[in-house]
Length: 228
Image (tube, rainbow, N blue to C red; front, side, top):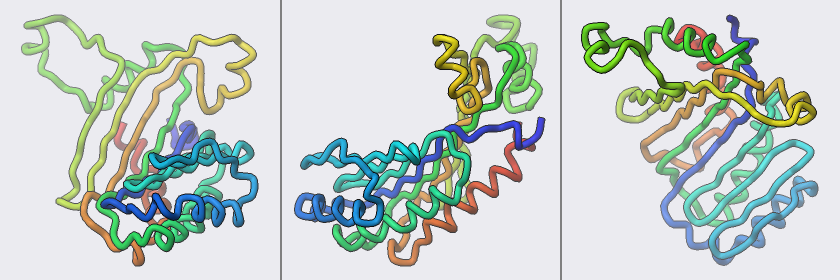
């Protein structure tokens, strides 16, 4: 098993902030500015509650409101495009909504590792050493684990947090649909869902979206295999 075996099926970058009520005044202006740079973005929703735009070609979605901005891309072949779009669009909201600080910055990566069957995935999880309960305690209630998902929360100091979810997935869909997206959404696979987040307040002006996304990606590229 090597890092290239994992396919990045989805990436999410989310910026949270305290109430930015200028959203109510400048939502339309923000959408117009976004579409000036990316005319292919289609507006799916624009209301007092939230706005959602989608780019079918890039398989990207942008959602924002008075509390957060969230970028999502599916079936990621290149991280550069996602970083470029996030870096270019984020300053639009800082200006239009007068956002000075972020109270949480999250970056989520959903990887899929194709498997032959469910048993192969269970074996990977068991041999990773992440879930270890002495047989003496386990035998009080049963003989073996019968669970296809595990979630781990890890704090790195008081400023950074990871949530790692390991789950075994199976798809039941028509064959022609599976073949179109099997690389990113295998029929059977191990899904590794990692959420990396800064949980302290950071200056919006000084924050680099590009550097944050890139550093998280490289960290997972270097450590994901070692972890499982």
